[in-house]
Image 1 (spheres, rainbow, N blue to C red):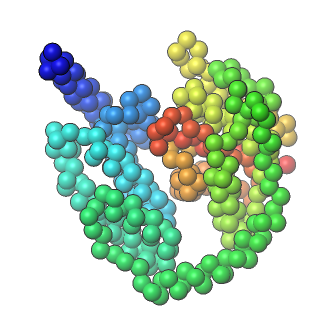
Image 2 (image 1 turned 180 degrees about the horizontal axis):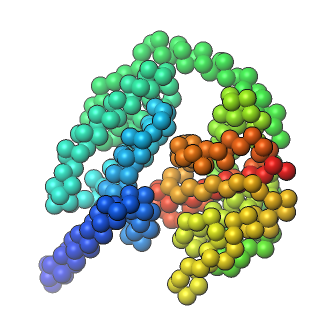
Image 3 (image 1 turned 90 degrees about the vertical axis):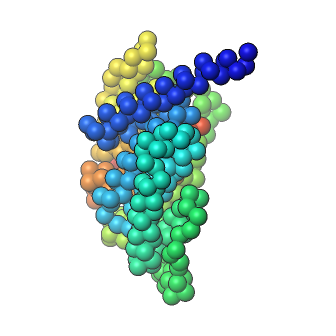
Length: 337
């Protein structure tokens, strides 16, 4: 009896995987970024399918090729390695053969090694270690090592950055207070502006601001001050996107299974912060501050928002829609007032 059930279930699973691969492949050929978003949506419904991770790997691989710096490229390559490991773990022999995974994986290894050499050249010890550590989880050997001179240079670099750190510590950062009913927010309708949602990781939010302010100071720009109301606005939108399963600057409400636009970006932010905002960035992907920062840094429009010379205050929000490592939402909004 059990054998008969297996005969029925296994072909169904295989057909579902094949249909998913065909759908994503067709989308990928038309628009790689739209295929990426589609793969995330499929992930949210079925985390055991291998195909979505394969196409996420391809998109990250493409993004890495277009990256401007060794640091940002290494972050994207780490994302690609995560996707590759998830694909390899779930894919059957037929799918591994169909995608020529063994050769693709070996070819990708050369890109990882090249980036490690560039990080070594740029004396970026931290990113070097992160990338190599991740690569060794999927490859048996990575034949690039740090040198003693690089270790010494990194120590001198850390000492030189102490001044920047002390300047950042003088900034008045104020996150919203945490009410006891913060996570009882009702979604699916327009916000009132009174919502106050607890962050899933205030530590990562602070880390993002530290990364941004460090870069702004290095560019002789004024560091940004965290504003509690802008942060409430950012956290609300991040959680609303996660809960209603959409990715857009405009607020969307899920009504009878369909999303409909309900309120514009700056109109929504103004409910929380009456003085008004001048920018908003959104990101869907991994939950680390580095991932969100590098993604926006590599996009000209998002970069300009982060390094707007008129901006003085900022809000940052992080939300998670499921247990999937890829399903995080980040929102950044800022103001000149």
